[in-house]
Length: 451
Ligand SMILES: Cc1cc2nc3c(=O)[nH]c(=O)nc-3n(C[C@H](O)[C@H](O)[C@H](O)COP(=O)(O)OP(=O)(O)OC[C@H]3O[C@@H](n4cnc5c(N)ncnc54)[C@H](O)[C@@H]3O)c2cc1C
Image (cartoon, rainbow, N blue to C red; front, top):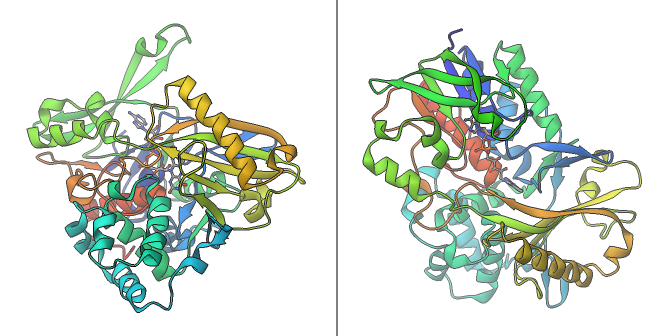
């Protein structure tokens, strides 16, 4: 079988790129080694609940890149809006907008700059921290505290000196401009990806799950297609390395959306220029993680609020906390009378250190009891754990924008990249999706007007 384009990965980047390519009449194949759509933004069923993998808030909700693409393609998605953010202060939980110094002319000036700086101009802040960016504009604590809070939530990094100004300006600017904080698809991500799947089907696009790409076939600096593993047999020690057969799929264009540092597992390093190899290898492992209580299933809600909740630094764990009372926003994902709280503590710790992770989780239990008195009396079951690869490459100065690989591979015909480990702007899924759009635009040589 021959395709116009093969897209590797059914995460947000691959789903956007393949949908736009299919929309333009290209014959597309999209593959993933996983058994379901969504990549890291997938879902699972547990005790009658439809759970997202980790916590997945889509910044600006239907105004995000995913929302704009679904509107453009006529894909119907219902969004549950998360109206805002509550932060824990010395005087308890406060609405973030109450803390915003709205009447301060300096704040108005800074907010306007964040909203109006065009995407193409943001690269001038790619090597600057948001702390320095703010300091150049104001010394007022009220403004700095507000912007620091937003920056922690949008980057999941704990220290503002570590956050790239360009990324915080872009995402905070989008929130201020659209007046939308975040949202989740009604019924969970299963519904979102099913809607995209139906669209791809209607366009004659082939979707192959449980399919691992073992090689991107390149000859004379031109992409020829991919090799996929076929027919693993058995589930014994290292069985996955015993390949019975492989299949060649021909395509002049391949879009790779896995972690960029895994590219060289399936594409020969020596085909790429030295600068690119160094750039890609340098990003390996530079990602953020989370630890703690991923899901609490409760008999009573811990709060009536519809907002996302954040704490800059928990007393006992010493880490930030993000928590969302998701069933207050979308009760359909749990059986009647069950209330789900999802979240965790963003961190940059060694998540393979089980002892340290258990210590942090135990400390987070006590921290949660203080933040939401009586919470544990109402918990019926809970899932604790660690997660990594939360935000592709951690968005530090010099790790974003122009410091990342472009969506077109250098010195290579037909190879493209998309996802949250290459060039793009935004938070997590929004970033990945926008990068998928920019990748499709580059392949097609046209713009879709997606902001
Ligand atoms: C716990 C957790 C919480 C998160 N919370 C949020 C949040 O609240 N908000 C937010 O915006 N983002 C969040 N994120 C980040 C978000 O999930 C990612 O930014 C987004 O999924 C990246 O999309 P992507 O398409 O770039 O990559 P992915 O989603 O990783 O998709 C890439 C896909 O490529 C496939 N693949 C790779 N190599 C191969 C191969 N050789 N053969 C076949 N298939 C291959 C992989 O199986 C994968 O499915 C979170 C992530 C995690 C882990």
